[in-house]
Length: 98
Length: 182
Image (cartoon, rainbow over all chains, first blue to last red; front, side, top):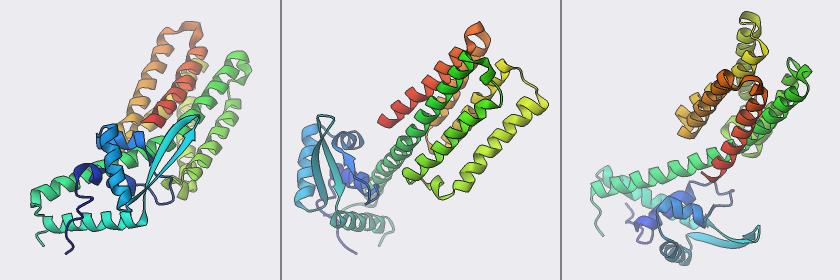
């Protein structure tokens, strides 16, 4: 059994990865505001966690202007999806008593 | 790092909760377009009836047909599960319209006022039922607009057609805009 993923294990980052991997890879991902609502994090807190996940290569962040407003979109990378799947499998294995 | 079984269960529950919210949000976003489409269809149809009462009757069915075609197109564009079964979606519409026709024309022989109240509420109850599986917003919108239609039926007097245009047309458009942000 793999160990826990130290990066994803943190509760806010776990929620971020859960939300992003729930989106189809072909979709554009979720915007910052939506992620903030889903995770219950503040702007600064969420930004720091997204930086952490970006450095790990688990997410891709893109910024654009939509209707003259800045919009930050976040998407799970294939590497992030695989890491999240491993972490969830690890949690399930704990519950199963393996 | 050691994780206890109850901690792992709590984390998985957290994951499940977030995933459910994301999926529901996607359903709401796609449904929002359908709500806005039907809002426009209802608004146009009711305003046509208001401006030219001759439009009341079988003519409005052709306006509704545009709504049915638009619904199928939105389901397809949104890659919603229902788009994989266009026949079922068409069959669902056909069943609703057949049921409505049996009761409003064949057996009930409703007058114009009753018909204008009956048809929207028939579909509202459909939304209310769908909401039991796909999210409370559908149920709230279905029952809320039904209550407004009934209020108009009993208390709007001669302004019932305009009331319907505002409540079902405008109501659907507003609900759709709200669902896009949900």
